Length: 206
Image (cartoon, rainbow, N blue to C red; front, side, top):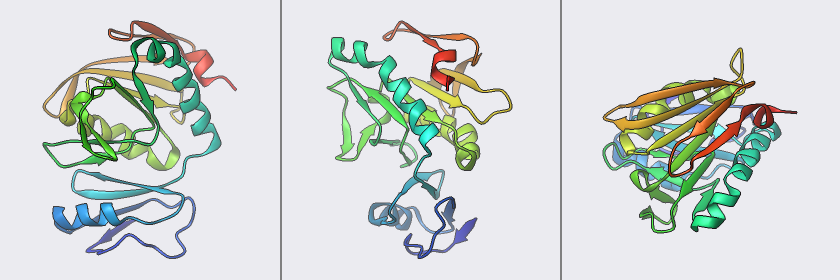
């Protein structure tokens, strides 16, 4: 549902599977509401002039995120990188603030603040699509991450008719220049600086 002209995000009795979008107020009010957000077991993002509040992810969603994190464990350790599952991404162009399911950063990546890294400093961000987040993850997030200068966006979509993973690279303006799509029975190569192959059957496996 969309709530116009809201001045806060505390929603008493919000169902655990609810998804709320807040629009119709100034960017300064949106930023203030974002910073003051206080709803247990929910996540808030500021994307394209709207606040998007989503419930905590399911166990299946968490399992996919954990498996993806395992893929990066060795290369993270070898290069001194960081892998985060609760750190936000800030876009200076739009003032958007996204919270990816997983982000890989070099240790020297710049911060916007204590809760957000600057998008162009990331190596990769990943989102796992849930039924309630499909529209934002598939439509809003690619544009937002491209505008933030994130060099690689990995979209893992287990709720599509056929589970699929899309790797988006070469950000420019409001879009990514290159998209590589693989199904759950295939592999997907991540280019430098990763230079590794994702086995999607293992990623999606029960």
